[in-house]
Image 1 (cartoon, rainbow, N blue to C red):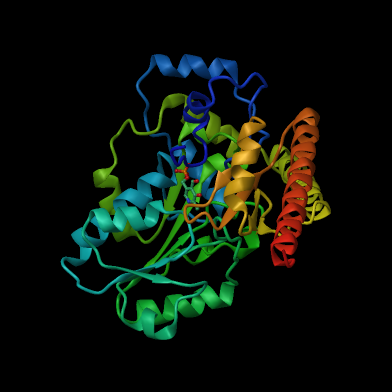
Image 2: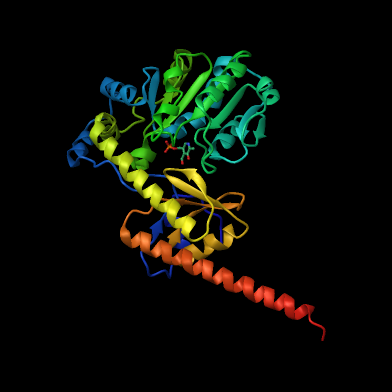
Length: 353
Ligand SMILES: Cc1ncc(COP(=O)(O)O)c(C=O)c1O
């Protein structure tokens, strides 16, 4: 079976052409509840997209910073920050610090531009920070869920900025804890914050994100960004969504309720987990067999790249919760039986003939 990332249900279906049941997709950390799209917004597509000041204003109010540029997803910034760094600072041999476990596209982007990468475990050390030209922190981390506190990040930023190095904070999963955001510090030099619209609003296909940083960085980014990068439908929907305080409050409650239910379900089948409100990760030696077992039951979850764990997104419908719970219980039962058989076999082998 070929390895497949999260959010690739079509590829999964091709690998399991005989599956009769409807697929349950828990492979991403995207909210299963989406901001309702106005059918009228289709009309917007009859015009070329124009960059609306209203979009900037709505995003600025939602994220708490005026120093921002709307982008087609935060992926756009992830892919373009290495180039922006080079355009602004020229050649620099110092490494870029990236978390060992974390959304892999950061590493890929810097590597593609020929930057040296140094991986850190959990937190970068002071020595690493002193000798780097940039440090990426995913806050909270996907998939580990590790959350850096504000003063920790402020301290990291101080060390980096003292030698003109960037702190890049990827806040794709931070909408539910806005108090931990670094967005209000964006007036500081060498601080870059990435926002993803798709996760909290449950609309990753619209491709909306934001780059929050000082004007010199935004200026370079603007030059690289095509006028038509964010479709008209995406702009109209995002303006409504960012300003819809009531919907956002309800969405927060809905996600928190589902998140609690997921943690409790996983705990009840004996799985330790860590994560965020939008996903839970279970590290274990049997991650790969669990992943394959669930696939064979038409449930698609995310196996981590190093196969050390499995990440679960939030189910949406009651029927999905039910099937997911049953599959987990059956898996537990089948592994318990296997361990029992193994133990019995070992015991028999040890018996004198
Ligand atoms: C940590 C993290 N950052 C950024 C992204 C990119 O999100 P988008 O480009 O949809 O905003 C993802 C996508 O899964 C992610 O997990």
